[in-house]
Length: 256
Image (cartoon, rainbow, N blue to C red; front, side):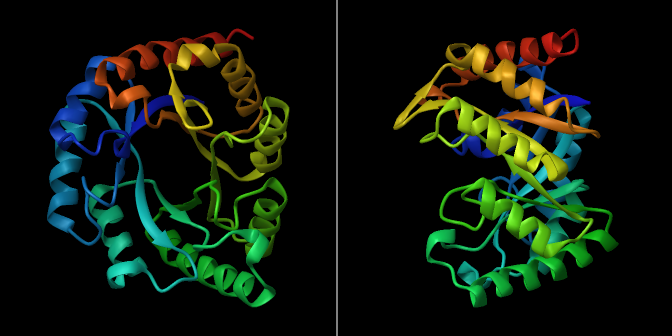
């Protein structure tokens, strides 16, 4: 099953209540709350507060979008314990993390070992709380190519580790489809946006492209969210328009 949502980092300039109102207006089903501004890491009271606001509008919490860098000494002394505390208070089913802080092209075996070891450890901790750990699929980390992403996930080999997916802007549509298929065995949530290099576009401009992506996502068993992330000009009205397209994409995919 695929449900719709929004990553709160899309609107860092808005308050949690304003984001909840927008998501409700758009008719989307879930929010991933970010750990940088809206639900700060380790602020358990804030997490409980945002949880209450979200659920009172009938909106699900898809994930906790942390900025924990696996295998690294994190900025401002951030620990996974702080991240996990917030995720538990938020009652998020998943925690989004980053596969280190450097690209796979400059990472040696020792670095890979550090990331893999830390990933297995935090996966154990999160599993005890009933929460999955989902890697960000992103440049300048060990998930910056399909080959290195598979190497990382297979190297960790933990049942509580998954991976999100988003299209890499620099690649062709066919290459992006290959990336998506490569991570299907571990697929968590999908981040939905339509970008050209340096330019954010309306989601409607990528309608056919995203129909193909959603069709591929349907091949993976289980439940996940397709969530809008960033919109043209950071414009709430553009978000509402993109949400219409996203809902149509998901509905159409059920009949294909």
